[in-house]
Length: 253
Image (spheres, rainbow, N blue to C red):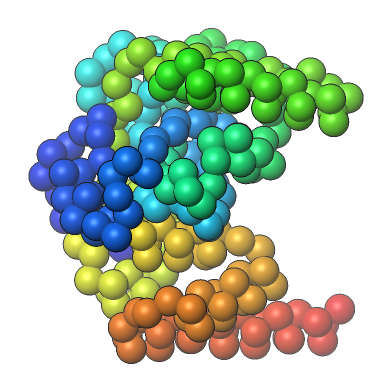
């Protein structure tokens, strides 16, 4: 795992203050936030990260009572928190309704294990709404999704009336951090930099995909985004390694 520097303002409930500096091309009135919980936060963060219109993502803990909980404390199930993902998005490019659709696809909302939240698991399926409009859209989205399934959705739609606490270093952009050379090329050295980087957000989403999709999406990413030569080289090596492994696996089959 890539080595990050310690957090400078640990467990902040908001995106870092420097967030807005990297989003100057997007007027603040078009930036919105949403919070979702769907099983573990690594996969959910990646799912949102690769969506066009999503600007930033952060993993963390939501819904509990303890101030600044650690991952260990949350896993022990005594704080009332669950693993969650905060998403910053440009509402001109993607709607809250569409984010809900991504949420349903990213996990199994009918998993009965989520009903044991607080008893035998700290994982749950939940949409934490920030205002009445989000509550209404989340509920309508849940109804639409339920009509497509033959099992009952156990997802809770809950008011975000508690703080969202940022997760520890190793839980931010998990799939990106596994690629040391790409991380080095981005010169991201702190949790805050990982959280506020749009490029890190997108690359983490892509690197969390299945191999063949990953190859196509990463190739496309390099074609349409301006990144450093070092990043291009590191990503190109990933693509070549995956293609080589894919070809070797195909021969075996």
